Amino acid sequence: MSDGVSFEGFPGIGKATAIPNTFFSSVLPAMREPGDLLAFLWVARLVQEQQGDARFVTAEQVWALPDAASTFEALSDGRESLGRGLAACVELGALLALDLAGSGQQETVYFVNNPASRRAVARARGGDLELRPGAIAYEPQPARRPNIFHLYEEHVGTITPLVAERLLVAAEQYPQHLIESAFREAAERNVRNWKYIERMLQNWSEGNQHHEATGRDSVELRRRRYAGDGSGAAGSASRPR
Image 1 (spheres, rainbow, N blue to C red):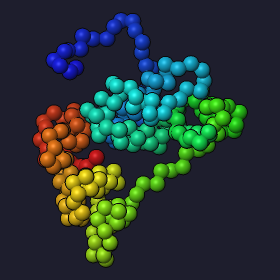
Image 2: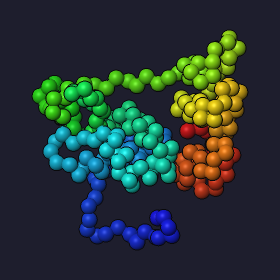
Image 3: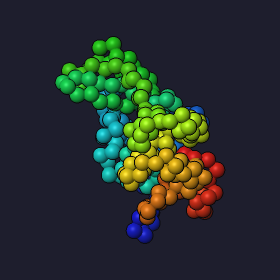
Image 4: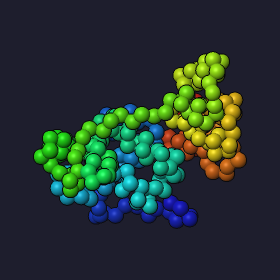
């Protein structure tokens, strides 16, 4: 709890969010980031507050909850981790996703993967169920994330053969989301230099994810606190997120 107020315990009778036991045995062990768990928990809570068979939410609805936003900020890296978490849950099969298009708008909606949701998704894709007035439902296309070469050309400049080799090595060595974060942070600092970006990736992969010149906790430290490592030693992390 914040502001020095301790949690006094759960009430004997109160609203509750049901989580299937198979989640703990089959899904939770496969999750790799705090944002994956948070995304599932918040979607599960929101859909269980709804009525009917077609219960779904959007990322915007999750983020609009003050408590949800604060947990993503505290335990992960904010709004981006919500998007990654939802995508990871879909990939793991814990959530189902549909894209809705109509009236000049497009959105992705998420369901907890249970029998009622599977029936609703099948009916929506077949045109028998309208999830939004006038909207057509279809399977989401895999997100096309910018690869390291596009990021380099966008933020640094022309790729030479020597730089291309180093980019290939980095693409194999570091997670994509970490590479994107490094390019983005360098751009925010107006540093168009691969050595700077490469050094940032090296530091982060070694557990020193203190973004330079910032006083906030790093994503890596928050991840390790979530995992139960309270030592706070920046150099003790064994692998990047």
